[in-house]
Length: 196
Image 1 (cartoon, rainbow, N blue to C red):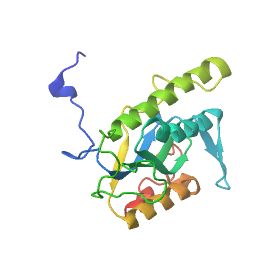
Image 2: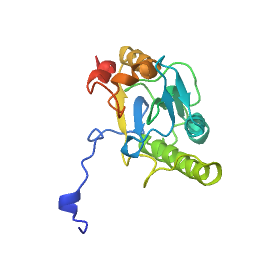
Image 3: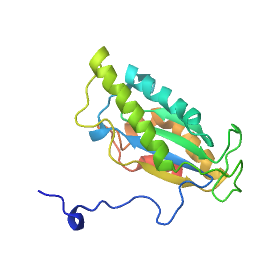
C-alpha cells in the first residue's frame, strides 16, 4: 500500500501547543520494538539482571547531561524491554532540586534542547551501540528496529507527582509481574500507580 497522508497520518501523543524545550521535568518511557526483552531479566526474587545491552543502555542514559548542556537526569531504570527515566530541562548543571513546570528559567538564556531531540539522540546512540554488540559480541539481534518509533512522556507538574514517579521507577523491577510492558505480565492496568 502506498503512503497516503490522510490515511496514514500518525496521531501525536505530545501535548498540543506545549513547548518541550521550556524548563521542566519529564517522565519518559521508551519501549523496545515489539516489547522484545533484550536488556535483561527479572528473577522471582525481583532481582534485575542486565544483559550487556542493558548495561550499555544505562551508560548512554548517563551521557545525556554531558551531551546536552542544561539537561540533567534523575531517577532511571532499565527494564527487560523498556526504560523509565526522569529528564530535567533547564537545570543548567545544577544536580539538586528539579525545576518543575512553570519554574523560572535559569542560566544564560541560550536555546534549549527540546525533549524529543534528547530522546532521539538516546535512541540513536543506543541503537548504533546495540548493532555493534550484535555484530561483534553476539548479542541477541532485534527485528527491524531496536526501539518503538515513539515514546511516552508525562510533564511532571509538582513535587508530590515527582516523588510518586521516582518511587514508581525505583519499584518497577518488583512490579514486573504487573507491568503492562511485560509480555508475560498478569495485569494490564496496575502500573498506573504513579498517576494517583
